[in-house]
Length: 393
Image 1: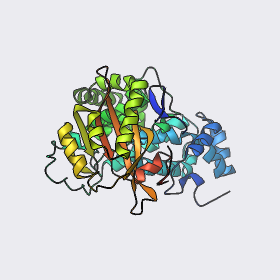
Image 2 (image 1 turned 60 degrees about the vertical axis):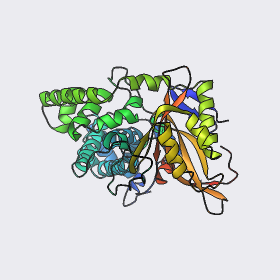
Image 3 (image 1 turned 45 degrees about the horizontal axis):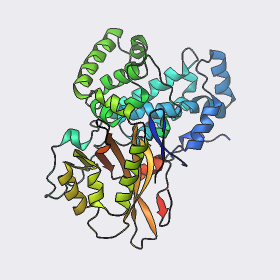
């Protein structure tokens, strides 16, 4: 049985030299939990005098690395909120660190180092958003699909939101004065509504209502007036209120595990791993949903989901095709899922499933499943890309 514990309303599984560029800016790397831990030990020096900046610039890059690296994690969270993509967020934070390292002499110590780094990251993100459309999820972009018809082909363009590992929130500091918490701001429901905002409004709302920055600070960052910030923030709030149900906040708070929820999740895993479609469907709410980015098709209702599961994930008639490994994504229970190779001596990463629970009644049900079909996402969650056939979770 998969054991879970509640930690700050999150599901958490038990057990579980001088160079051409600074070391943190090597491309293609994923920051590990240990690297994040080392960075946090260094501590954050936010205010530096001009003399200190000059001394650091003259002394060498390693000292600059030590100053800016502790901000990596919160910048990843910020860029993800803006972009809706782990891959893009990592690229943008790498770019932010590289720009900061190369141009540290322009900082001059006349303001906050944190504000300076956020300015670089925000403007770099806005530059990216000028070149591509906002991300979303199938349920927000397409009508329900007919399970009797073939699944629509995946869209070539990078269109979809990506899941976010809750472990990356471990060092985020919540501001009790903020309109939205960091945890709420990365929920899939919030992000889907947030992506409806124009990029600048999106940035202003995150800075103002999640990070609790003053209008004057946001105005200085974006080089606009205070009144322009307040006007954009008002429009952003109006749009968000139309598309984001505040009941979602209560659902997240109610997601704290109990014995019944833990049992439900264990039964969910068992049904997948024993090819039990009937058992899996029995765990679903009557009007449950299933979506599978990057495929635009999504399905609503037990009958439709039963038909699509039978026709696709379990169509091979092969026993033991799937393995699930518990994790946490976007404030919800989630699983890395793996598919057996042809010889069935190992399981290869297939993607991430995010499970939405229905806590509106005493009985627990699964209200929705979002299956992100992208093996590369698994590494962001600190999980292996391959499991042996005899693996124990």
